[in-house]
Image (tube, rainbow, N blue to C red; front, side, top):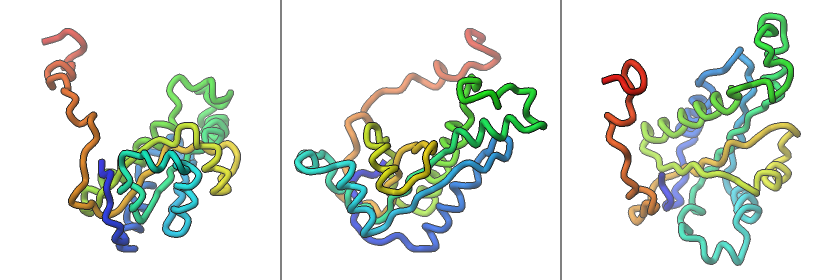
Length: 191
C-alpha cells in the first residue's frame, strides 16, 4: 500500500481502465449493484476536509497520502441483492427475505473482489494505491457525495504515482504463518 504520492496526475486512459476493471468481478445473480465514485481535484479537498479535519491532520502520520490525485470510493447496494434474490429464479434461496437472511452477504464478497481488481490493476499499471476504511466517516462522506440511501461504502482507494520517500506502515513487519500452516490440502489436519 502506497502512503506517499508525488501528486502527478493519473493518465485518464489508466483511470478509465481501472474503472472498467472494477466492474469485471463476480456479480452474484447478475445483480449489478456496485457503484464507484471517482474524485479528482477539487472534490478531493472536500473529502479530506470531511474525513481528516484540522487539527487531526497536523498529526497524521502519512501526509503524502493527501497528495493522491484520484480517490475511488466503491459502493455496494445490499437491498438490490435482497430484491434480486426475491425474484422467481432465485426465490428458493430465501435470501429475498432480507439482509439478515444471508449467512454470507454476497455484496461484501462482490465488492471486495471489485476492489481487488483495482488493486491488481494499479500494480499492472505501475500506480501506487492505498485502500483504507472510512470507519465513522461513512455517513458524512455519503452526504458530501450525495450517495443514495442504502448504499454502503467499502472504503476508499487513493490512487497515483508513488513518491520515492514512501514509507511502509509498521504492520508490514508482522510475521505471517508459514504457507504450510495456512494451506489445508484435503481438509484441516490432513498431511
